[in-house]
Amino acid sequence: MDINVVKGSSKEESEEKWLQARAAGVTATQVAQLVVYGKLAGALSPSAEPYMQWGLEREAHLLEMARHKFQGETIISNDQVMYSSINPRYLATPDGFSDTTIYECKTMKSDYFDRFE
Image 1 (cartoon, rainbow, N blue to C red):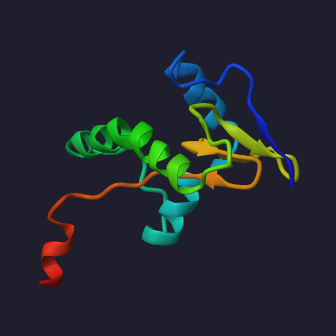
Image 2 (cartoon, helix red, strand yellow; image 1 turned 180 degrees about the horizontal axis):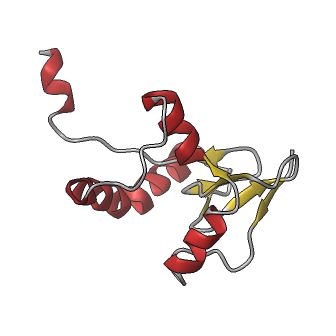
């Protein structure tokens, strides 16, 4: 399966164009919402924004850690919408990719593991 970039969909260059590109199909975020919640969750509430910012600020560091762990693999940071050649309506904006792997950086609140003590 080939993965292609939607031209002009860099979130850093234009969030509006990035959102327009995402509106052309079904995104990985929407699929995750359907699996987890059984419905599309819609826009995030303003209370989620600090958590989103927390994760966004750490993406570069997490990709650097992946580069260190998987030496010899060229991992490219990404902020563009990508689509499948099988069905161009299948969309995602992975945080990074290489010739063999798609990278999605995830973080969690620091107190997540406290519940297991």
